[in-house]
Image (cartoon, rainbow, N blue to C red; front, side, top):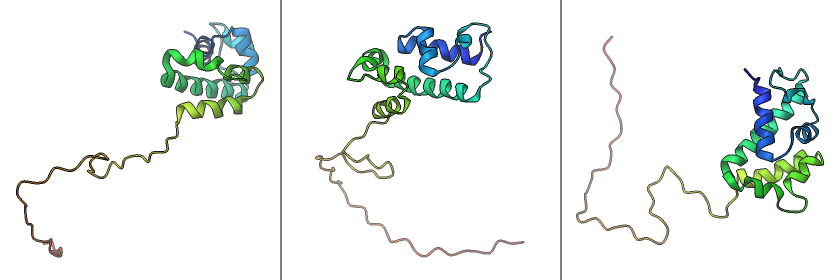
Length: 143
């Protein structure tokens, strides 16, 4: 059974559309991870780079779907070029814009039952008059 690192490496190569050799260069890790009988990287920094990039590209894959390939090659420098130039922070900033889009419109509060903007709430047919709630009293429980 292939290791978790091998599976992550293969998925990354597929999502990025690069060869295993290119991906090894992008990550700065040994190509040994690309072998099916490979174990987890012994170097923790290499393993961290592999899994961090895998998680970012996985999130991009979920957000963009089949548009991921186009997004990777769009712009100058493109996100893929940033990776090849070891500009991982620049790549992650570009990815964050897609994964966590910012909008100018405030998010709707989930704790209110407000009507959408521009619509008038329906007027109730009959008005229900309720007494204001009285002060809560505590009772001693029998021992």
